[in-house]
Image 1 (cartoon, one colour):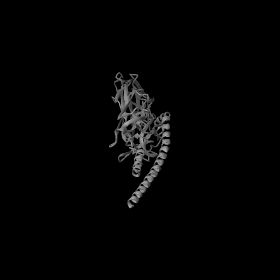
Image 2 (cartoon, one colour; image 1 turned 120 degrees about the vertical axis):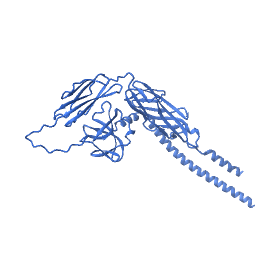
Image 3 (cartoon, helix red, strand yellow; image 1 turned 45 degrees about the vertical axis):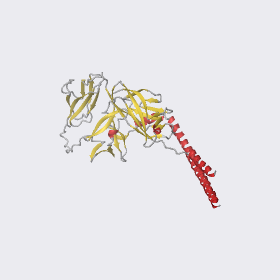
Image 4 (cartoon, one colour; image 1 turned 60 degrees about the horizontal axis):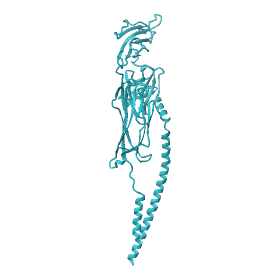
Length: 425
């Protein structure tokens, strides 16, 4: 009878406190599209596909996908959100929230589909603001799978009907007159200006009203020959360049004044403000402080409203981002490393000759997310409350387990003592 009671206690212990297997699975989240090249005004599909695989030795039940939460960001100057196949996808203006709570279980994979429209030529990325949350079906708030994500880049080309006309219909310079007289088929001109003129004003009209014009090299003229470049970009992206060679005359000598000693020629490139130099394999920028051009610059994308261009400093080519449609303007964004080795965007003002951290776009995204994160905050609070309860239950569990084990040991010792007493008799 006593032996039966002992076996009953052991069976009850195993039934009340069964061994638990921790959920273990890895999720892969891919952002996909049928074609990574589209045209202006085209609508195209972007999908988010989740696949889950159990870890080695684990049950396939650990790869059943439950709730899903993510923030998808994109460049809203290039892409416009049109619609989504699921009502759990909301937002727009560069940020979409996917909040699929209470979802039906998905065995191994799940897909979310959205449609976008291409607004203008350029390239833009679709990526996640933070690592998405993929929850194991039937698990708690903290039963999440580790996830691997990727980035989708889509190139937008001009529409098929876009014009390729990159011709100028008129070109003038002030002060001075172009030689020879302007003609659409002529691409190179010259003009001479007095020593007191250090800039020229270029007026250019395009044959096609949808073409755009940018001018570089028209300011900060040095004595001698200067090259002014007029770049015409057609509606379909075709470019054509016109050149004006501006000769700035030398300063006239005053016979009553003793000539000044000959100065050493100034180095090529920008001679004031920001300077560049190559040291070993690194490019160093100096402006009061020293900055290094980040070797990870290729991993960065153009900030919202900017496009990639090139900055030449002291004959060194540096990747930069200029405001879209005005890459030759005063504001440029560079990818630099500070003295602590921290990589990030920096804004360089050519006119004011200043450099400062550039994080306006990150703030805009953060503000968008903070406006619609009430559910996330509620989930975090619930998680913290559940964690306190879980810790209390764990402490109670261990206390009861130890007490239960002591009782079993005591009963077993008593049983052994009674067996020994019967044997002695």
